[in-house]
Amino acid sequence: MSEQPVDDMVVTPWDVSGELDYAKLIEKFGTKPMTGSLLNRIESLVGDLHPMLRRGIVFSHRDFDWLLNHIEKHGKSDFVLYTGRGPSGNTHIGHLVPWQFTKWLQDKFDVHLYFQITDDEKFLLDPINRTYAQMQAYAMENAKDILAVGFDPEKTHLIIDSKAGPKFREVATTVSSRINFTTAKAIFGFTESTNIGMIYHAAIQSAPCFYPSVLLGRNIPVLIPAGIDQDPYWRATRDVAEKLGWYKPTALHSEFIPGLGKGGKMSASQPNSTIFTTDTPKQAGKKVKRAVTGGRQTIAEQKELGGIPEQCNVFSWYRTIFEDDDSALQKRYEDCRSGTLMCGPCKQELADRVVIFLEMHQSRREDVEDLVEQTIIRE
Image (cartoon, rainbow, N blue to C red; front, side, top):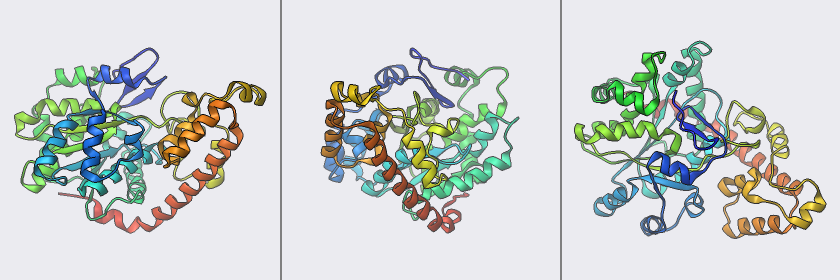
């Protein structure tokens, strides 16, 4: 698959690694940065801002200004949300963070969510080492984690690719007829060795951009909250949308949640630096206490020089999910920089919060098990 390196950074739909520079990613992908005026418009519509918006974690967008214009004209609920998950293993906290933001959007705008689970793609990416049955099983397990976030079950529709129905397949086929191989190759870097399933999957992952319009019988805008690594799919989709009589999908891109190790986003391929929803509280606590920080080599140096929270994954976790209070976050930042706060206590407090979070999520996961089947859409 193609890579888009910026220095040592690689960001594709299948791989994110290296030191991430979000300004360069905006330039590379041709998106637009979030602005204060956009944030003000959101706040005027719903009354407040999610921490990920206030803190710049949602950093980029495609046509979100157009969507706000549409909402201000037609009402704040006149759009739908679409996001997804590729179920190659167990869910981890890096997945839950943007899903919580998606839930906030659903709650604040009172809209439907179409959540695609691409079990077919994950099999097609590595058919030698994976079976389709394994990916389908992961899809059902991941669905529990999705619903445990707290999405409204009456307004949440799970599109599991292996279970998708004729209307969904019709949309995907229609989209596929308008994307030629030259375009797909340029966007995704397909080669002669790429299996034809992966080539067709570009249309499968585009289909939810238009599927709600088919189900509703009218054209409705779609907002995709997702990582910018998935943007190539929407780029292909946007090229054909208006030709097919549908709105171009709009998007909000959030920063990647780092693992507890060095570099890149949290990944299941690095289990020692990733907190899975299946981890025991004891396992999770140990992983946090081993985290890479922005601290100095010794306590004496830390007190004299201060820490570097900008380079600290522990601080990043507070910033993204584990500290809602902006003033408390700012104090933690200042205490770290001044050398007042040591890494040990900071990690211990985070470990305690992670354990509580995990226990609550696992409890909710058991409660929603019976909801999975009723939220799967098969039309």
